[in-house]
Length: 160
Image (tube, rainbow, N blue to C red; front, side, top):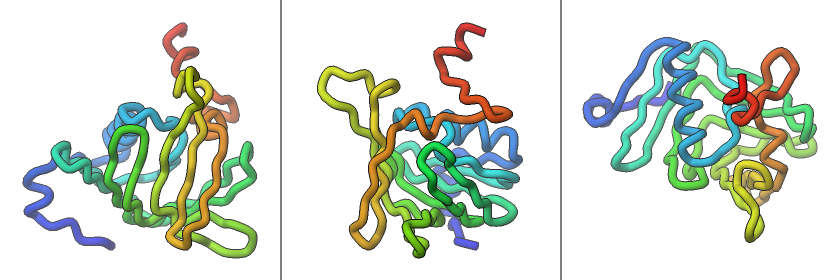
């Protein structure tokens, strides 16, 4: 497990328990404009966020594996995930690997882009960068949070 020093924790909002950590994770993704299903973690035991620097961490009980059907990619999320969150992206990400061909590559950056005149939430592309310099671009809609096999977008939730 990665050690988060007590000095870092003193300057951060620290939360314990899966329910509150899931909510905080979703809130942070929404704040930077990223899709809500990008971090499908389970059994989160601790999360924290330092607003001044954008540093965040998530600790889960064990490694989580997820298959994103719409893009045909396997992703593993380690027990410890750290990153710096900024406007329209995540930088210096650790603890996340994606399968590309026959190799597992560390995902280091995730950014969101939209063509000129497009609304980021509907027409955006998510770009994943690895430590090897390889990057892949996918539609943001492919990473919307799924509930029982159905994708529920934020606009649909507001109507309910």
